[in-house]
Image 1 (cartoon, helix red, strand yellow):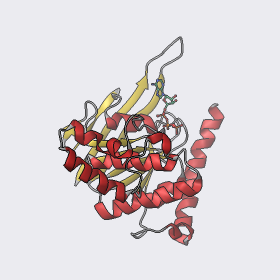
Image 2 (spheres, protein in one colour):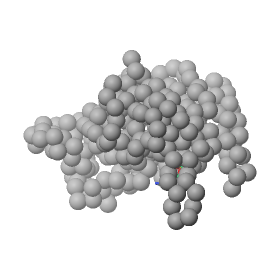
Image 3 (cartoon, rainbow, N blue to C red):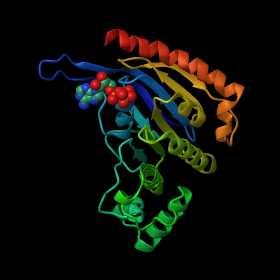
Image 4 (cartoon, rainbow, N blue to C red):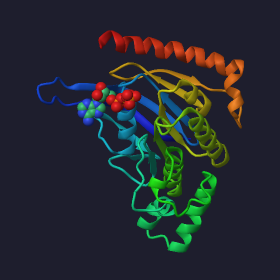
Length: 261
Ligand SMILES: Nc1ncnc2c1ncn2[C@@H]1O[C@H](COP(=O)(O)OP(=O)(O)OP(=O)(O)O)[C@@H](O)[C@H]1O
């Protein structure tokens, strides 16, 4: 069943300070089904974040429309859970309070929201850190908290914009496994932006490759690797073959960017 529909969505940023307008996104179509895990891969500046921000309702398209569960997106809403690359926790709230923030806004009782928050704290492996402040956490732990905060609102779709981009490789690999484990268990719908090819394949059921700016969908590749996936899958011939194909696709686009730089 279709959950998210992106129809002919484009974005041009208006001219500023004598600069020409920036065409960030060509008219783009994308359909995401319930429980899909879709990864969007593309060279720097191809409009990945722009597309995600439009789906989140943080920006408006210049043309086209986005519908979530049949309703047009016109602004932010609790039906979409967002996680960014930069750490966005509220510094004045503890881990538990950060995770329970949306529930508090919705008027859920303290006992109930603590119960829900603690369940997500366990899921993301943060037991024992409930009462820590964000500044006491590593980058990986902050992102675990941000993911738990997004999940605690039980959104229809999770929107993740390079959530592991600032983490070291070891932490990043562990976070990928954690997120995939949650998806495999709870069957959430996820739209995940990355420029890391391995990450896009390991996590995704489908990889969307975007072209160089102005971005458009250049290729859609199904990832038919079995679940549950462990990190060991990254060295299988099937994985390596997919990786080689995507390296070629991305390289072509990156070269176009370099030629115009
Ligand atoms: N608010 C804005 N005003 C003007 N131009 C913008 C704005 N936001 C983005 N752009 C431009 O639109 C293009 C696409 O940007 P976007 O951040 O969506 O790319 P991206 O694919 O997410 O890049 P990266 O992988 O480097 O994060 C870029 O050329 C960027 O400079």
